[in-house]
Each structure stands twice: as C-alpha cells, then as structure tokens.
Length: 143
Image 1 (cartoon, one colour):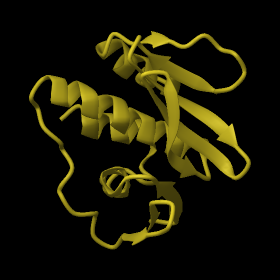
Image 2 (cartoon, one colour; image 1 turned 180 degrees about the vertical axis):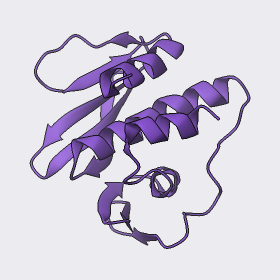
Image 3 (cartoon, one colour; image 1 turned 135 degrees about the vertical axis):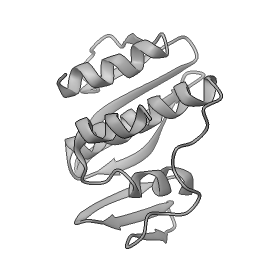
C-alpha cells in the first residue's frame, strides 16, 4: 500500500471523510467535530488539527514524509484509544533523542531529523517514529 493508501485507511477506521481540497492543504480527513491536515509551510510542512471549527498547528516538519508519519500516529492514537488499546509509545522519549522545551513548545532532534511540536506528548511519540518511513510506522501502529 502506498502512503496515500495508508493514511486513507487510518482515516477510514475513524470514519473520517476526505476534506474537500481547497488549496490550503495537501491531504486531510475529518468529521463534523475533528479534522487533520498536512499543509505546506514556508520552512516545510505542518500537521494541523481542527477541533470545533478552530485549526491549530500540532507540529512542523522539514520533510513531507515525516509529516505523513506523524499524521498516521495522530490518527492511529485516536483509533487505539477508542478501542481501549492504549498508547504503544513509552512515557519517555526514545533513547538517544533530544526533546527541548522552547517558548513555542518542544523541539525534537533525532536520527538526523528535526521537528517542532506544541505538546510534549506529541514530541515524545515522534521520537519513536522519526526517520522510519510511513510503511514501517504503519506496521508499528498496527501492533
């Protein structure tokens, strides 16, 4: 399955519909309450979440592949929680990674990848999937 298929399958598990392309995002899915999208930004790509009509940026990435991997983590985490499966990621960041508190949130540097997050939980989860590619991340999320 290609990247688009993997992301669409996670969205489908949540009964999310594809967002109507309006040029403001590259990919996106949601329902009446919540939506997620990847947008192109001046310094790379963002993963954004809409809740009750308000969009907020969850994370910033320098590469599209890293944004896709994190979007899969977001969608899978909701699906797993809805089924009582719990979080597959340990409470602390992966070994040999750096999560640094900043004025805007948290910066992650791991395996040659950098990303910025609003929440520490998202930053911590990313340390376990950074640089692995969506295929491998998907396999991990299916455990």
